Length: 201
Ligand code: MN3
Image 1: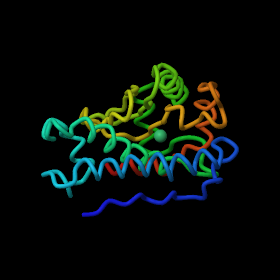
Image 2: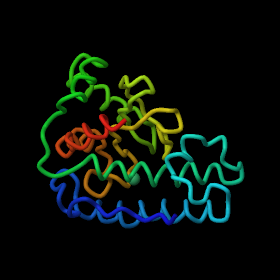
Image 3: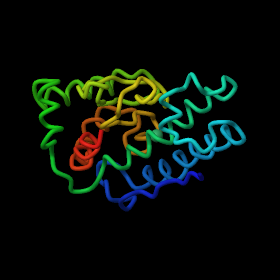
């Protein structure tokens, strides 16, 4: 099995003005590509080469210790960004619908509360990492942040929404203004796709 960088599902300028074209090009073409290249390099010739990256991340303890950190960082970076591009899009509906909306109301009381808690997770991540809305094994939603490229899959959870708060995700446009980036990001969340990912679980 060979791994390829999935193309962006829209043009690199499609998320303007919220996420700028230059950031999208570098983020996808350089950063995401580098996670993939480094993952492929790390697993080459090992027992986990050819396994789905998601399954590998779901059982890091089974990964040989000599490459475990590389797999966690670069494999995580690869699948996290695969999701990130998908759950964004231009001209998307402004909020969740259907079962995802119901699950959000059940877990958080309201969409607004969910969004506040997600923003707090994104702002509370010290240094590089991600904010996550995940489905736990029982289907219930929860929110947390994880450092670096750690994947919710490694905790047994299924990511529904993830927001990259590494500086490479926003620094060209927003510099140190992470809060502005986080708030603006909601304008490009693809709720249709997020709903499909939730249901597919
Ligand atoms: Mn990134």
